[in-house]
Image (cartoon, rainbow over all chains, first blue to last red; front, side, top):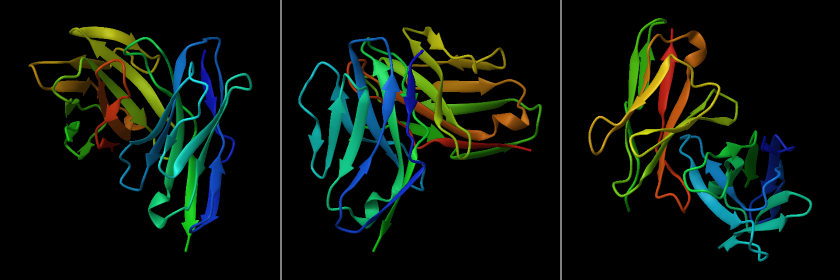
Length: 115
Length: 112
């Protein structure tokens, strides 16, 4: 069974600084997707970034980037120039490639941004 | 930009009552899902639905739960006899299959 682990229940960062959130996963599959979702206090689930396992290049979306280490089964999220609006719960998620397959989520990391 | 909508935003019910949570997925999507999140815990998969039938369900999705797509736009989750432990946030999601899932804003279910 696939599992996703986020070992940091809480993280904090100063505004304008950089923070990295960790995620590891366990799978026997070779082709899959990894995601980071943001959940603000409204509890809406918002996709932050997506990585396809077959791509060696790390995904980047503006201030958000990932460090995908396939052999180590590690998928960390780096937030640069942190903003107050980045404060939220962040979930790492995994799914296998076939269309319609389920997402498996980690436990989440609560990020606080200090002014 | 198209979005997934869910109604109601908050549902309060008595233990043992039936509830129906409603979702309108994005119109050209083919796959529909329900997830739930108990307060303070991770998001858990309940069920996926494709081509008018359940394609996958988790161990949480027991006989108390059912899903339906009664018309071309709505996707519903029914809980037949609610328990206290069903209190959670329920998220509907949809996808075209090849890309990411789009989540609705959630329905907060409170069972008293």
